[in-house]
Length: 255
Length: 324
Image (cartoon, rainbow over all chains, first blue to last red; front, side):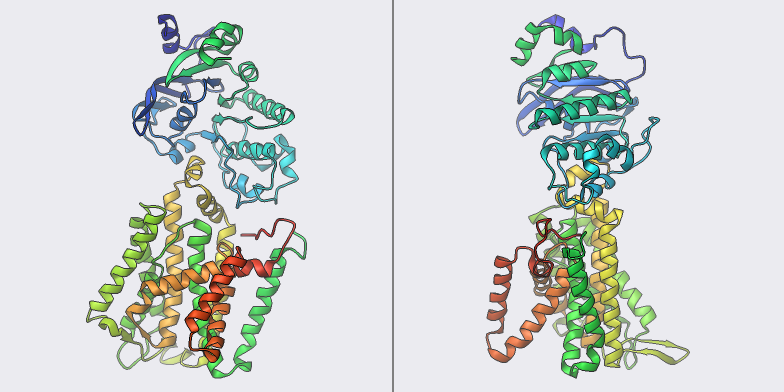
């Protein structure tokens, strides 16, 4: 790794530093799975309303990073601040109540609950943002779910399950949404719908961390990008800069 | 939901069943009225366990602990030569079961899966051996309850549970009450959370729920309702013994839940009756009662993956899925 990129990793590059204090700031995050040192000192800043593309080849630690941010995988070292206050070591339900929501890889629908129950179970107020997400607003965002409110969660197509997973996360009225492979395995047309919803959320001021394999879409959607290589940040900077640098993409992502 | 949906069919069956139960004391012989009382008590016990196994995903193998504790509480509160006061004895028995469930649940919920099964079994067996050895609790003989509790005001008895018909209707009212309570609970916001926990505890935590508190609440509610069953059983049978607390009892009630269909509430109710009536019939045909009942249980488990509740609900467009 070059010194140049290390500098970029330490200080988020961009036209200007984020005007607001970070919603979430992670410093020197480490995580282990058994003997494997999966995260080896990650620094991340996410400003209110900002979107970050979290990139990297398979097994580089993207999902672990997301799970560590919401507390499902406690960091073995390092600190996490939310609104400048320590959230290090908090259990996931406490972090969720600070305004962080996860759309997990594989969607994770509660299949013994109906669509409506899947949404209601998550319902919670108080996001700090102007808008409040409720059943009506989620159904306006995903009209297809409105037709299937009484269906069990499993009797949905993959795209509908993904919409339900996003809708469920929105019902917690999050300020930061973590999307782990939100478009994986979906038909192109459905993927387009999901991306358009993500852009709508961004316009509404919901901050996002997006893990996705569709590099062109994710870089077009996000403000900033970070690339993980073997548990370390190999790049952190403007998404547009990465989109323009084919050589860097090839070297760090193999695309 | 269409009128012919599984929900409607189940409601119809349960409604007809309750009308039948209400009329039964006039129709049935004394022996069968007594048998039905025992089966209704078993049904309350099994429905309470279904809240844990079928809805919260907690396989407790020590549910008899709370059943037995309520019985022992009634025995301790029954004075020699006089009945206990129902207004005192029933709340005290329920409170004793609830407290025991809070303590045992608090410690057991630190484990999951097989660990949880074993630790709940261990707690119940501890109580079983304690009762067997304790002379104050009558040792392995248990304690006699010579008088059923009574509800009296100013020396005048208002509800005389010694009257089999009065006792029958008390148990029937408890059965209906517990059924409505559990059905309401599992559809309430609390119920949605525990059903989500059953599918994925971590995911439910990531939605912002302190899942262990919800599991403990469910454990205490189930333990308290098991206490209601244990109280009625002890009052009905006139005694309580370590057998009420032991793993045979825990295993029996778990079998009734599985037979009926987990996560339905109706299922364990149906299964308690199917199981009890079958046992009664088989006694007339063969001395190998256990063997015959065992074949029935194996057949149900193999042929009806959703239990007896699935049989009544039948097939539907939703793949026969039952509402909570």
